[in-house]
Image 1 (spheres, rainbow, N blue to C red):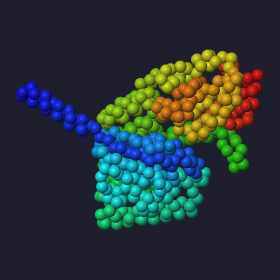
Image 2 (spheres, rainbow, N blue to C red):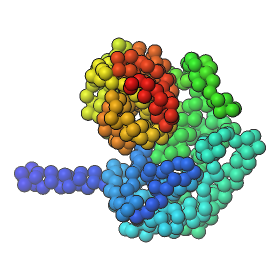
Image 3 (tube, helix red, strand yellow):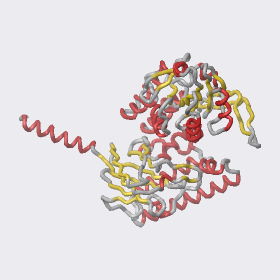
Image 4 (cartoon, rainbow, N blue to C red):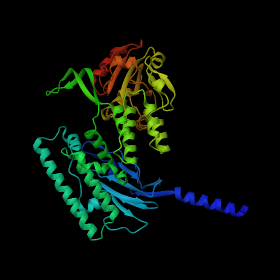
Amino acid sequence: MKPYLLLTLLLFSQVISAQQTSKKITLIFKKSSYHFDEISGFKRMNSLVNYSEYNSYREKYLTINNKDKNDTLLLNIASDKIFLIHNWKELNKSSRVILFNNDVVEIDYDKGFPNFKILNRVVKSFDINLESHLNLSFPIDNFVFFQTNKRSRTTQEEKAYRMELDSFIQKAKTSLDELLNADKISRETYDIQLNYITFYSLNTNTKTNFSDYKNDLNKEELIWIKPYRYFLELYVKNEFKLKTFEKELKDFELKTAKNKTQKEDISLQYEDNENSFNLIEKSTIFAAKAKEYLLYVYLNRIAKSDSNKLSTYSAIFKKYSNDIQLIESFENAFLVNIEALKQNTLEVVLYDEQKKATTLSAIIEANKGKTIYVDFWASWCAPCRAAFPSSRKLHEEFKEKELVFLYLSTDANFEAWKKANEFENLTENSYLIINPKTSEYLKKLAIDFIPRYVLINSDGAIANPKAATPDSEKIKEELNSLLK
């Protein structure tokens, strides 16, 4: 082959390769305060927009900054299409849409909900904004009901909810059939909306017999739909013989009917995540992508437990997944390669945002002569984070005193902690605990539940292992007493 012809073919292949990997979707979020309102006690810090790519179970969340001006996001994707979900203000409503490579999409909120407009191509009238057009909002599920009412449904309310859900499912399916017959919705949108609704119904029905749906375990093409993924998890929970173990908690504080606190010893049941992971790996009933997803779910649960075999299970997972980016992200987030530090029993090992290690004893020693108010928290702990404004006020009130505020996170996920740490603006004396399950110091403190506050006196000894919260008057009294 002549040199110039070889060079031409090489350049042509590089162009084709670049075209194949350079896939994008442009989202233009119009200016709106929609996302930043407080609804039913929930402060929506962002729009809760998420998407999954076709043939992928990876769920990606978007943070939208469109309160003061339009915000344009460019999504770089590997597949040809994504399934995007945009939640409404109401927790039971969402807009769902399939978007394709090179789509340019504008989202406005003039009608009080996300309104999609695809600018680069013509779509069938109900391929977008289907839910708002037909008022297809799910009945309030049990989780949202509990969050709103601070109690579970009564038997009668549960029965009414089931009837409401059944009616909604029937209405939705009828509407979808009519739209398909009238050629007002594409077959692909019809299929994904129908599957979304169908599996949501199965998942929320307490009487679902999951063994009747074994054939659905091989529908690999549905892995990008969230209710289908959750269906797979529920199948394992209901149809596999999963091992559990008990954990006893001493002097657990309970609220009585008269809102008084009493201490009791309680016992909680936990799933043996390692056993569940092994059962799924040995199983032959799942499609390859479904099995990979379930192994990833339980790998994350193992990472959040007190297992000392995370690297072993991570290595097993690599046999089933070729998603290098996913694996690297997981191993970086859960610090897979520092198991020796995680198993340290003698010290409380800490990381800062740069992954520089120190210990609690070193911090106490460096602050001898000062009182330390330790705040144990985590990124996922809503009460912990709700207390930060009070903590800042307390900090300001005592800023002239010999008092150190120390924030220690029990997060298993380094990246989740780092993101929350930055959001809460904890710029100093904030660390991630590397060995929260093995440290003898923390075992003696019995940090089983958070938020939890501990006072350390100027000599470095524990003055109060269960100190008052930062929003209380009692903590001011305690601090003033120690700071005399």
